[in-house]
Amino acid sequence: MRQKFSIDRIEDGVAVCYDENSKKHEFSADALGLARGSLFEATLVNGEPTEIVYLEKETLDTKQSMKKRLSALFDRNK
Image 1: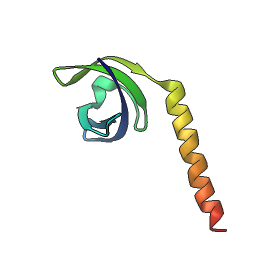
Image 2: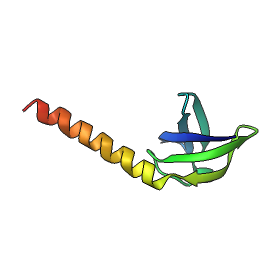
Image 3: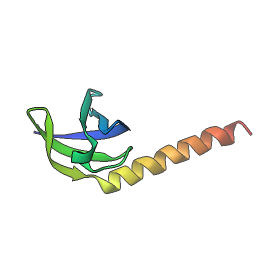
Image 4: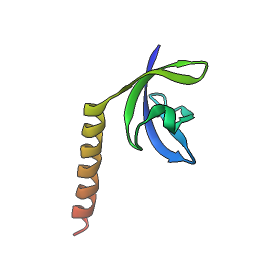
């Protein structure tokens, strides 16, 4: 079954990811080949991601949305 994940951070070559249910997963950052903040879909086989698909448009949309929220927060305090 395909699941959607987001890469929260990368520490010592380990990508700390969260799935749609906020469950934490740790994968090899080299195996994923994606940057922090990326969204991707994968099928887990024995706890390892396979058939990894980078969700480029969703990643960009999420980053833009977060940037707007942060700007609104700072603008509110002016």
